[in-house]
Length: 151
Image (cartoon, rainbow, N blue to C red; front, side, top):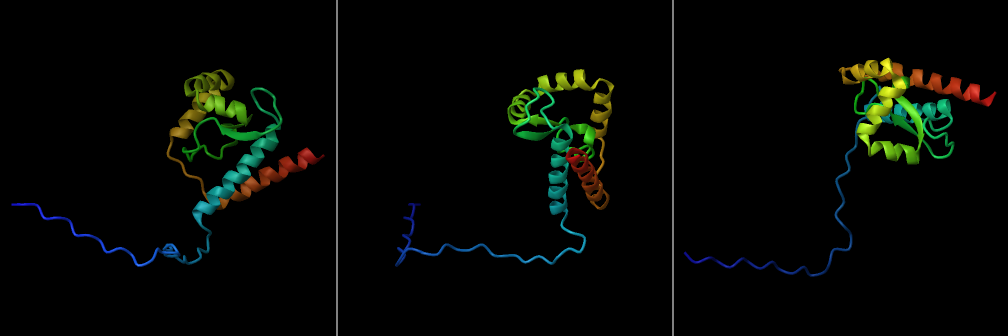
């Protein structure tokens, strides 16, 4: 059977000037707060706490461009906001060790000693933080560090 030609599309009379807009969805406000917003707030508070607590890069001593580096990945919710699971590193050290996971693991084993296995076991556990308790705790930690650094 011979193949039929494809039908031609009629050309548009004029180009569309205004792009189609995505449908806007209106959410009902959640009285307890949106969980994702609470996670972002907890991350922001935790990062600021770690950078103020350490004050300089744990590896090279640099004081500029500090970042919060998690010893075990942030994906593990059981240790994501554990103060023992984060160091302040400058951007250069953070990038260097992010791209060398085997070297990072060796560095952690040497630096942490027995604490390494404790944190690793906690990270691999199935814990999830209660945001109603975590956020006030992080705010208190941050306030105490800001108070001690101002004196």
